[in-house]
Image (cartoon, rainbow, N blue to C red; front, side, top):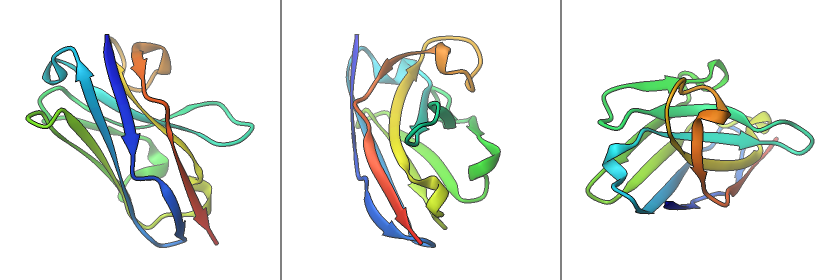
Length: 123
């Protein structure tokens, strides 16, 4: 079992930046790849970005390439999502999750989830 707590969401103007954090507890954090997903009202939860257990490999949705970056600090059991050049269409609840196996891009391959943090981008 892994417990995840996201933080750092809020209201920002278009073009602004936010940094989300996801603090993990429970099993050995450094053993697992981590991902961020988001869910806008009335839409399916979608993949945003992910990072391998070592931090050597990262994976991005096309919609966030060049704007979002992911990093992790295994000593602090924390993964970060840096979001720059935010757009109104980035508005959603953002969730971090632990990848269990398989493709980084599929929601079904993530086993434990945080409660989410709201990001709202105003135009």
